[in-house]
Amino acid sequence: MYIAVVGNIGAGKTTLTNMLAKHYGWEPRFESVEDNPYLSDFYKDMKRWSFDLQIYFMNKRIHDVIDITKSGETVIQDRCAFEDRYIFAPTLYEQGNLSKRDFALYSELFDIMIKLVPQPDLVIYIQSSIGNLVNQIEKRNRGCESTISIDYLSNLNNKYNEWISKYQGKVVTIDGDTCKFENNDGDFANVIKEINKNL
View (cartoon, rainbow, N blue to C red):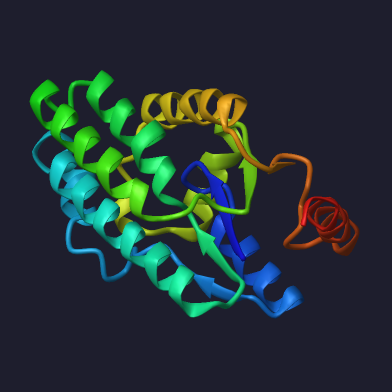
């Protein structure tokens, strides 16, 4: 089984992925941040590095899903390939950081490659307000994220809500503003209850 935890930057995906992996005994797969060769450059100059970063993420995530499928294990993944295609790449294109030519090529490559892998059996979406995201980003204090703009986060949030509303598959939505699963046992128990209903 393949489960994906999705949501905007700072929503709490990694924390929830860790907690669910421990609770269920699932194998966790995490987004490549510390060893990502493009992320720091991207946040310094989005226009120059957007295409490179999107290709890197697409390659990494498609390979991850191929490995997940081959493993036969139940795997929970921090972020999935669909987020790049339907949220990050379109936002970068609309903001002028990804050219029309590069966006078209990226989209074509993605649409070919995604046919090679299954979609998640369950998507867990952490929906958060901009204020909550900013607080979380500041709290974790990753240097490369210090230049993220409110406009960028807002545009991503809009894209997430649009994508989730059209997603053809099982979705559990968590209110990241009110559900403090990391610090509140009752909130985490409610998350588990919702997941169990959909497994």
